[in-house]
Each structure stands twice: as C-alpha cells, then as structure tokens.
Length: 236
Length: 313
View 1: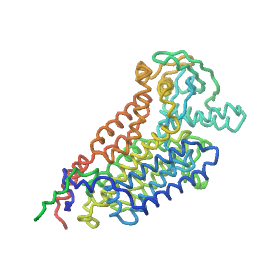
View 2 (view 1 turned 60 degrees about the vertical axis):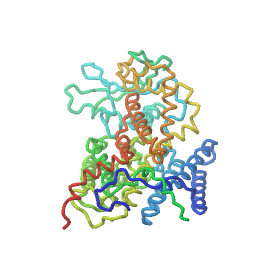
View 3 (view 1 turned 30 degrees about the vertical axis):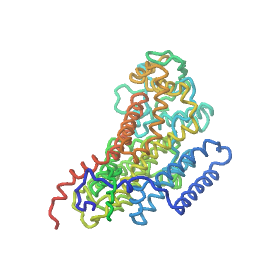
View 4 (view 1 turned 180 degrees about the vertical axis):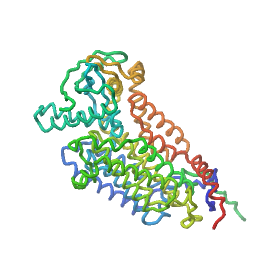
C-alpha cells in the first residue's frame, strides 16, 4: 500500500522486481511507435529537402527510435503515464513528439521553441577568426568594448553570433549598403550604451578583424593579425 | 502436499516512484524559481536600444505583426513585461494563486521572453530550453498540490501519486533527452572530430575572444589559457568522454547504480565548459537536482512539513 498522507515519504520503498524492470510493449503500442517514427521521418524529409539527407540522419532517427522503445518498455514510466488522465498523457506524448520533430526539422530558427540540439559537430577552422571592438576617447585613449557585457541578455554566444553575421554582411555589402547601415546602427547602440555614465566618453568605435593561428595554443600575450575593418563616430 | 511459494524478490523503487505532491511542488519551486533568478538579473529592457533591423523573431513569434513588436520593443514595454513576468513567477513559486491557467500564462510569457532574446541572436543557443520545456509541461500537472504558502487542499489526490510520479519522470526525461540529442548528433555527424584538435582549438579561440585586445596583440583569458597547458591527448579524451556522458544521460532514469556517476559527470561537464569556454549553464545544473530521487523527496517532505501538520479547516 502506498503512503497516502501529504508529506509522508517512505524513503526506502521497495517494489517487486517485476514492477521495476522492462517489458516488451504490446504489438499495438509498438505499431503506434513505429507509425509516429515514420511520421517524423516523412515530416523531416518534406521539410529538409533532398540536399539535407545523409546516412547519419537515418542513423540518428534509428537511435531515437531505440531510445523511444526502451522508454516505452520501462515499466515504471509506463505505469505512471497509464494511470494519468487523458490530458496529461496527451501533453507527454505531444511534448516528446515536438522535441523529436524540432530535433529533425529545427535546423535553424523557424521551429522555435523546439529547435535542433547539436553542438561541436563540424570541423571548425584551425585558426581563430573573430571581430574585436576598440573605442577611442577624445584624449586618444583606447578602450576595449565588450558587447555582451553591455547587453547581458544576449550572453552565451547570442550577441557575438549576431554581431559576427552583421559584420560579415556589412563588409561584403560595403559602407553604402543596407547591411552596412544596419551594422552602423548596431555599433552606435553599443557606443551609446558604453558611454552611459562615463566621465570620458568614447568618440569612435573601431571594429577589428582578428586572425590568430591556433597551432601553438595561446597561453600568454599573443601577437595577432588584426586590421580595422569598420568604424562609427559618436553622433554621426 | 502444500508447496511454499517463494516471496517476490524486492528491489529498490525506480526513480521518483516515491514522488508525492510535495516532490512535484518542490520541482515547481526549482523550475520557476530558477527562471525568477534568471530574469531578476537580466536587464531585458536594454534590448530596446538595439536597432529594429537587428530584430528577427524566431519560429512561432514570427507570425506576430511587426507593428506589435514596434510597441513591444519599447523600453517601457519591456520593463513592464519583465516586472509582470517576475510577479507571475513569484506567485507560481510561492503557490499564492494555485491555478494551472496562471502556470500556462507564465509559461507562454517565458516562451515570449526566450523568443525576444533569441530574436537578437545569430546563434540559436539552447541553454535555457530544457527549463522552458519543463515549465511548459508543468502546465498539465498538479504542481500546486504541495509546497505552497497557502494551504491548498481541494485538489489533493489521496492514494493516487501517478500525476506526481509522471510529472517528475517526464521532467527528468526531457532534461536527459536534450543531452542525448547533442551526443547522438555528434556521434552520427561528427564522430571523426574525436581524433582532431577541435576541442583544443575551440578552447584556444575562446581564450583569445575573451582576452584583452590592444589592436595588435591579445592577452588570452586566464583560465582557458591555463587549461591549454594540458597535452593534446587530454582534449581528445575529454571530447569523447563528454559525448559519452551526453549519450548516457537517459540511463540516469533507468539505472539507480549509474545515476550518481552520470549526474556527477554532467555537473563536471558543465563546470569544465564554464572554465574552458566561459559559457555557463546554471539552469541545467540546477535541473540536475531532479535526478537526486530519494533526497529530492526527503527535502520536499521536510519543507512541506509545517503545512502538512496544520489543522484542516
């Protein structure tokens, strides 16, 4: 008999081994799982198009199916879900389905909040290649500007990624282009935020494209190939 | 002649089979409390200073007309949104208004919040997404049956712990899936990276990007630069080991014996990312407490004790 009062927990509760292990799903359940799996595969095929298809994607799908089968076979999960109402069961199935769909179809931003979870899956460049920001005061003093410190909401690579994309587009388009104007606006916002409450405000913000070889890991001061690629003046 | 029947073999209960209303209540406090702390220190209203051209709403938010965003992205609107969401989170954490509708509205607000910050992002970071999914799931579970400031008896389910067990298990499953997905993609797409210097190059790149730049040279960021003294083999082993930990995350659901090692491995994994790349994952580190099983229920029961002892009206 399970404890019934709130707050009472039988901490070393034990169950029979038969309640805790794995049991093969019924053929109906396995059929539903296979149907849902195929639906995900067809949805991914329709959404991603032919050029995205590779053997690894099918391997990924098969791995998720194996895990789904294991979860469906796990007695504690099955019994807990089965004893819930229809709404809860629908929420659980819906959430898991959306997660898997997002994992297959959500390569970019279009399926947010269900997106693809993937990190460090491609060979990166063997050199560091990024943009750095140096401000200049009226007295000629140089100050490094950290955009993420100015906008902490956009930490963990978010703002850095946006600024990188904007810089690449602006440089490709040139200073008279729409991308160039958009980048100017972005940099002026940084400049204004950086100058808030400063005794010695910045009058110019320079963007440097930095290249550094990573063959010898940078452990101390490292000379880098850096060139100024863009500038904005405060008030202009 | 009677034959003695052997008693069924007893084994320790699986993860969260002992979950009570208090356990799910504590999970509610953990999940929405983490959001509260996250939003309390996030100056969201500053985003109004960024040009509208940098704003690209992702996914579901893209259907909202541009005029709505013109109003929503004002500093006063963002500040009001932040304060309103903080208030809703506080009410949910404390259980002052035990309404599933309120949890639904709060979860919707969190989706908008996360969409807003990702609208100014180039890279679709997934740091808070497990927390977001679990918040959305809790809309459908009786999270106010335990650990509320105001006693809330109307919906207690004596004898039926299924919603609490299922709620806790699904939260753990969703969290483990987010790790499993990352590990699986790397296994099927980037398995050849394990033999390369990818991880060491990444740490080197982070050390430079977070370092001090003077126009011609960079003083690399301290801790990542210190980590770079490790031999190249150490980075290759760490890369493979972290992938193995990610892939094994769902095993923490099934195996009582492996669970402490997997949870400790994931904590170490997040800690090493913080030190080597300066990328914190505090939300996921907090959520790993959901895997503590017996201890989680023990703390929940202890916290809920005064309410449990109060006389029924």
